[in-house]
Length: 601
Image (cartoon, rainbow, N blue to C red; front, side, top):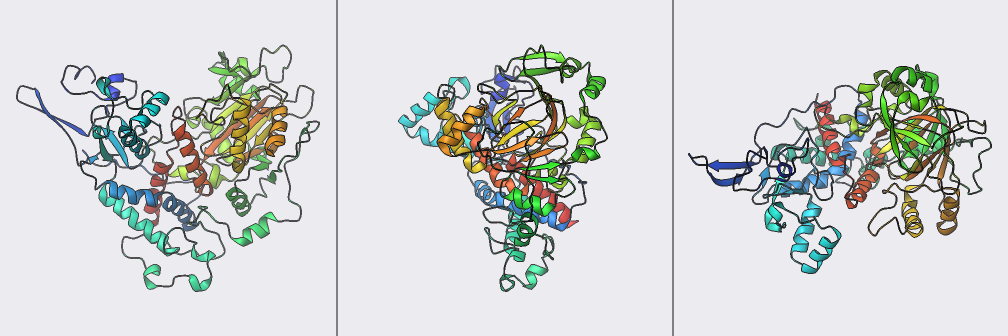
């Protein structure tokens, strides 16, 4: 395509100029070229109506359990909370002059070419190079083009911010508004969301009727008998708790907290024998046996952003997740392993990596095989392991890929969704001594996660094997950032986020200094084989294997943590090297559409 139009007197788009593999022409389906009878270009225009029909989205039809009204209500409520204002703004965006319309992509992720945030609504496209800008980046273009001093400061920090085609600079005049929404679909969704919000209080924020005094509950005939074609979702009955549209997307009822969390002897994650905690006084982490973890107790803790540990998972496992198993089944496959202390990498076979498990003498480093498989879907490569993992994962309504309360489970099969795992994390033993980089450096995930340890050798000293997790509460994140910036000034330039850089591990001396200088300690988990660790979105965490370990992790998006995921998306937006693969707003849109179809059936 690039060479075909190379000699024509009109600009080629960013993709056609770069000719990156897998990228498509930015003007495909939106730009029209008018030629005369001699084939010479006479005019260029853009479409005001999308070319072709909207794609038929293949929404899922099965979940881990059949969705009930309470599940649909919770998902649709958080979607309303996260999208209603954005959709109202998009409705205004559709009225902008010179609007360009395009069909929503299914085979690629639409992202802002400047900040790499996923594009959902309110975006703009350059008519010269096809570069797309989110509303925030477009507003910045408009701002700096009218202020020479701000423009120069922006270009000093980001030299390519205004780069267009043919060595030109972008101006506000280059951009035209673009939308992927059909007006009737957008308006219908807004009306249905407003109806849902009205039925649970006049408008967001509000509290659902089962959490309000009886005198406040609506009893009008209109609310009990929706109009034809509207969302005929029944009002909740009984004592079960339901989501709310106020500051936290989900509220737990008072009886949940009293009955499930304040039992006489709550259990906390125990230490590994003979492993020092260095006297730092960590925040305790609740521990449950998998048979005793009730959904109400999980939701109450999860809504508070607390990590949770679960034991007894291997009782239901049917596959031995051992080094011998992987050497036998996948030994000849080639993989890339990374040295934890230096980040050096090398290619080895699976057998060469796993045969060193438990052999602590004559090692040439602390190596890990992470994110395995790195590219291919885990389910496709390891179908038996996938089924076994999904069989034992605790809180399956949340954590399974098809979990009925996992917001990402509604992503259509024919759309390019986020890769949330599962992924394997296999690593040699490390330590927490000064200068150590641990096994996994301090970082934050964009979504919730659960990590299950399937196997561990004994420690080098013969003690019980396992791993040490340091999980920091989300409210302590700024203090951790301040500490890292003061300690690693040379590695953390201005504007960089030291947590999202994923360069640091807080060894025992740094943990002690963090407590002394900022009063911050971690939630510490000593993980053993058969135990899972739930990490809420927005909690920075790091891991140190005390022995050689085999673990599997999967990400998920829970109703309780949508707000934290939104905050993380904004944080990553400032780190322009990291693409927004979660696509949270698009995910909420698909979740709403999926649930709406189930409600109307």
